[in-house]
Image 1: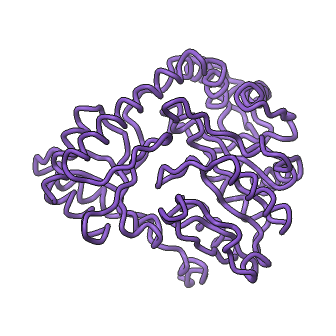
Image 2 (image 1 turned 45 degrees about the horizontal axis):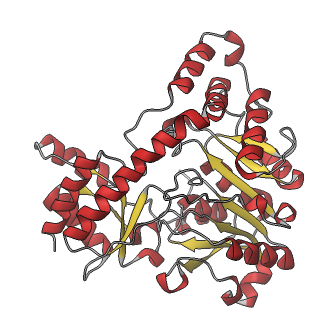
Length: 385
């Protein structure tokens, strides 16, 4: 068998790849495991999405190849929602692209713009698709630690000149996974100006735009003046609608950026199942009736877990968005702490270092269980102190 391509050696191990095995072994022994590791909520998708999917599966025309065009009414629903939610006008056929979940679009974007000798600017810690797409495209990711002294923002003015000169893509994600940080509008304006000055594509991962609390309404990067020249924004139904396994999202931005991504995808997939696109349309059309109630459940969970963890002695910053809390590890490294949490207390958390070296010293907990289970998890974690 031939050797793997050298680029594979540059891919880090996927975070906590052995955790499912340990979790299964513990459960086989009768241990009550509370899983707060993955951002995969236990809540149900909207009934409208389930009905739309059921109807689509009974329609033979929905089982044909979707190709990149996909379901026209889904594209139109995305454009209508973007207009209503952000005030952003988009051509549904030239400036919107359905994705098999935003992850594949974020990774495949690198195939459009990255080559040997070029680099991407990647938040550290951050979503593995940014780094993986860069490496598989033959480029070099430049990892920027997200630190509390910078409010977990990438400071563009502090980036090395040689990195900026070779950079093709800047990946940003606010509200942020895993730190739960939000970006002020002034910062987004600064980043757009930076990317325009240096001719860098701004890949804006906005997967958590709708899971926001206390009156906060995260913006679209496309609202920022000049962003249409350099930015492509990625949205997902996974978190907002509890549809992680359905694999549906979209990219939106200038015709040039969307067209490039669509062309790359033409060679690696034939689009999103039309039935899932029909379900996505139903979600967006029922946004006002369903999303606020779902977000309220996440807020209840956030408040319950934050209070319980504080009561156990943890240093908790309450975020105004996302489905995570990002907490300093009390006096130790993140991976040993996470393993102790799992083996000794039956609680799965995500060590910051598993998401990048810049995450060392922190751990992430996801709001993926009911409030009572979150309080129980906090009590167990408190025993580790």
